[in-house]
Image (cartoon, rainbow, N blue to C red):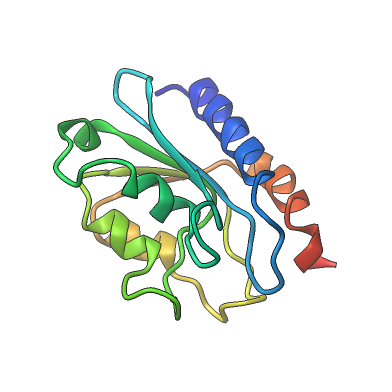
Length: 150
């Protein structure tokens, strides 16, 4: 993927995050999984299927865990994947690490608003996943979460 491709997919993920029902104490996040061929494999957003589902979790759940396309796929998430979670047994970081996905692109790091020290990026990198941060798009992803950040 080129940088321009990454930006295009992240812009789509930001649009997806706008579909999230706003919630007190939860970020609105969009996620898209894109195959090595540049085709969308799945997408998801926070609270898409229930009040606790995260965007990355929702997108991953739409594909079989052994889907061979995941090995060359990139996961785009508007926010750093969670590394701490009360509502599910696995965090989004753990779900990604348990998948064949080895490239993740994010727009911004999780602020310490809800989790004191999110270490999703560090954990993914330690697990052999390439993580790209598109800081130029961070403000666009933050705007969707103004209900939490004001």
